[in-house]
Length: 148
Image (cartoon, rainbow, N blue to C red; front, side, top):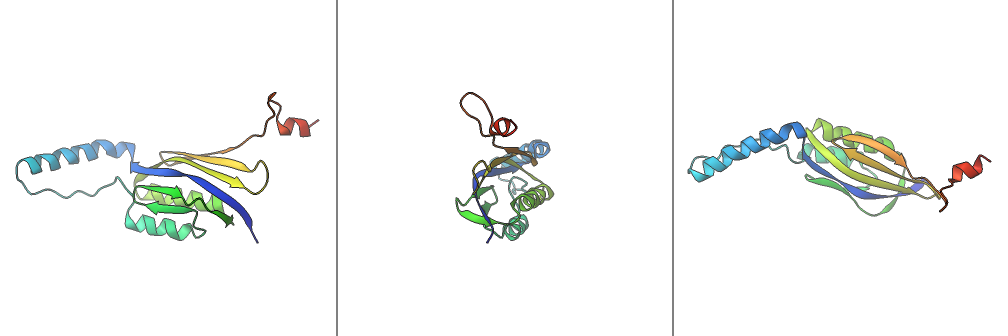
């Protein structure tokens, strides 16, 4: 029996910042072709996850914490047993980076034990992990009381 956690939140997938100008230029060419009855050129879209990346993420997410589409990753709202969530989440972000798109959003992880609440803030594929802090209304933290 493993440690059960609940995962909430979502990551939105978009073009990397450095690709946005290229995507805008491609759209101008497509619009011009449509307006002038020309053949519409085909460009590789980097706005969403590729089918290959989605398959890799689903394989990594064997615990089924996420619903994965080309446009994002959303929680399934299920409380599940986690064996390696943090390592799996880092591997998912690496797949997104390698696929050439950007993930942005917040994933909350709530554990079985009181105070085991953290969040993963993702901005342009960079993950920051923050642990929730338990405090009384006067601002005293549980850690400060325990240190007395």
